[in-house]
Length: 147
Ligand SMILES: NCC(=O)N[C@H]1[C@@H](O)[C@H](n2cnc3c(N)ncnc32)O[C@@H]1CO
Image 1 (cartoon, helix red, strand yellow):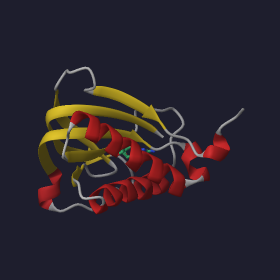
Image 2 (cartoon, rainbow, N blue to C red):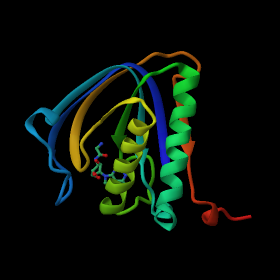
Image 3 (cartoon, rainbow, N blue to C red):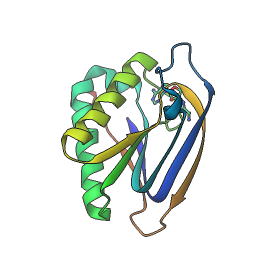
């Protein structure tokens, strides 16, 4: 899994079109969204994550929370983003992994937003620009690590 973490004044998105055959069903109000004072996690779920989704979900949640504490962000935003890797997991696996990350962050008491899965979207983001405002993380299951 590849994550790009951007501490932002705001993130806003607008759904434009379906990008896969069966995108996540969304309501009218979910076609647009905005969150202010937010740590945005752009996430590409990778093929290697299919070896142990439970582990990568847990690690991603912990990484995001660790950065949220460092930058003092209360609001989090999970953004499905298929552009950080050339070895993507299939959509069904990716959607479930992203859903579990979103739910896990909420369970830990954060105010969490998400962008819909499986669509082309327009988005605007305002990066705060401080030294920890742009971070990336790579997460792999233990058994996929080679010596
Ligand atoms: N920017 C717009 C976009 O990326 N749209 C992506 C994601 O919403 C989602 N998606 C599909 N596979 C994946 C994956 N492995 N990881 C994350 N998202 C995925 O499906 C869309 C087309 O790839």
